Amino acid sequence: MPTRIVTDGSTERVTHAPKVVLPAGAQVFAERAARLEHLARNHPLGAYLALIGRVCRAQADVYPARSAPELTEAAHAASVAYGMPPLAAQSHERDPQWRDDLAEIAKKLRPHANDELRATLDAIPLNDTTALDALAERVLTGNALDQDAALVPLIGAALQVYFERRAAALSVADVGNCDVATICPVCATRPVGSVVRLGGAQANLRYLVCALCGTEWNMVRVKCSSCEQDKGVHYLSIEQDGRKSADAPVRAEVCDECKSYLKIFYQEKDPRLETTADDLATLALDLLVDEQGYQRSGPNFLLHPGSG
Image 1: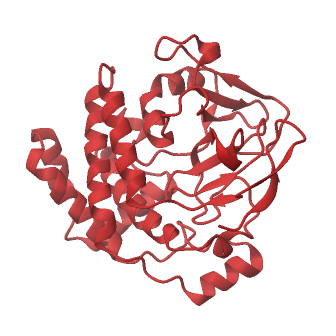
Image 2: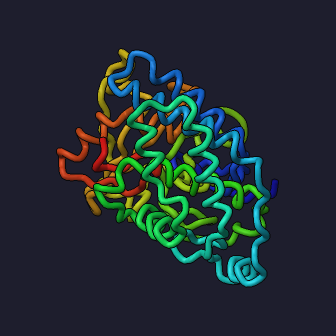
């Protein structure tokens, strides 16, 4: 994979490491499912985490069922020439296969669904493409209605499969010129969180993780992932798994300049961390930070804020 020279932001050290890391396919969903299954044990939100774990298992099963549509020449040219994300989620014309992914995810969940989940699956308007696409637009733009809440994780799961499949089919050369540090270079979506990597060329480097397609991109540390200011950035945390807050593997990186926050995950403190899964497992931290007047800057497509 081509690499660029980047700095890690914590020192003046310069290292050779990938600026952009494209997603690894079905493996991502399988690992997320396993992590959620582990986190669900003895967790106050155990039932919800276990359910989302089953959704992620379905994602892993559905992912290889279809091939990614080819990137259009126009999108590729704009990306290379102007640094535009080639699959910008809010302007990209989605292939109908995302709806097929949704239908299969629902089908795989149905055999072991309880009454509540079965009612949710029945409420998916699978035969109404206009309603489905409108729902997808609301989810992608962060405008889902409270009445959509139960459907958001399912719509989000299908969109993740579709966009990750398409992202994984790209090469780094397709997206390497995107220089807007706060959005995904593939689909222009905000990150679900950031992770400080452990080991190899990426050791101690901070990567933002796209909430939608799973692409990761390097961003210097101690810098707001929303407004890019370094003044006023600090960290909030709570006790996690018996660890004192000062030693917590998940913290909220908050910015006093734009009053936003995003979680940061430290693999050196827990190498098992999976950004999307552990984000769901640390919703208590969101409540703490929200109470202090900060707004989250990136989504988690497996949870509607009004449903939890």
